[in-house]
Image (cartoon, rainbow, N blue to C red; front, side, top):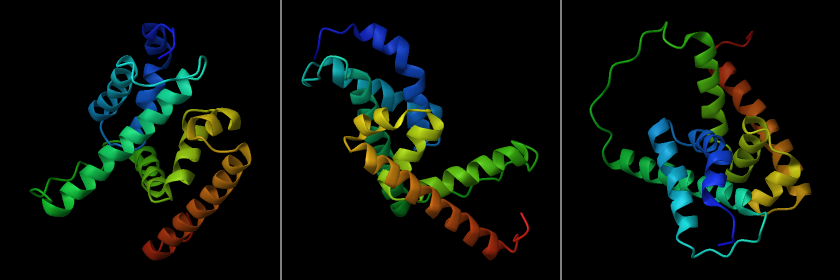
Length: 169
């Protein structure tokens, strides 16, 4: 690892990294765990990171860790769906919460790169250059993935409205 002070990186980026992880995993505890794991891996010193590239590297580790947790969770649910739970009251979270969940669920159904680009852009407000650096792709690819991701989301949301009969939303 570089000579960067890990505690400074932690202070500057922990919250935004947890926010990033929370786009993939549904609970804050798991998002925090994924983020802490990324910092621990960086602390281990096994990674050679160019000076000034620590934040994108951490974002990349958090993205990979969150996707890994999500894959493991999906596999577990396939083999053990668990007992049926009770539905929360309709008033909890309100309409805005339901709309946000709907958008997140739709985003999670996008191809991996498209979802990652949209999350980094619209949820973490990163620039195209920062997204390209985090994902290890060209800036033009960031634009392409964003364009295709937004188009796919629009299609998925429209299909959902048509299927549920809410065509006038």
